[in-house]
Amino acid sequence: MLRCADGSFYVGCTTDLDSRIGQHLAGTMGGYTAARLPVQLVWVEEFQHIDDAIAVERQIKGWSRAKKIALVAGDFAVISTLASRRRR
Image (cartoon, rainbow, N blue to C red; front, side, top):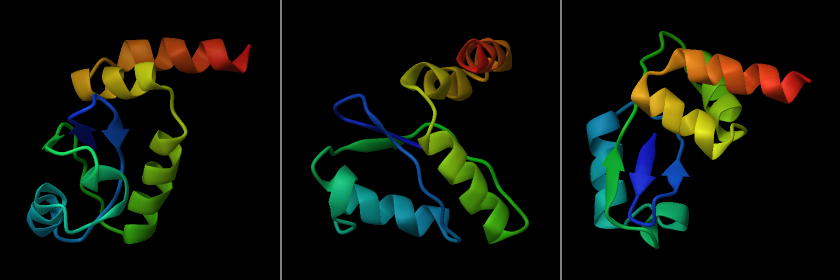
């Protein structure tokens, strides 16, 4: 997950993190991050299978900003609390 210069988050997956970060920082990726440079890597998780990475990417993209901030902070109690609030 990247934090953009405007404070928003970008979530994606890749098989070559260093190269992808470089592309984002250079603005060559286009799209969302190109207009919000610079970006900073704030959270990363590795997966054995790309399908698992894509599933988690989609899940996190659907999260609220508060849940993303809690993930970056490693505050899983807050994530759980926010998730239970949504179920009500």
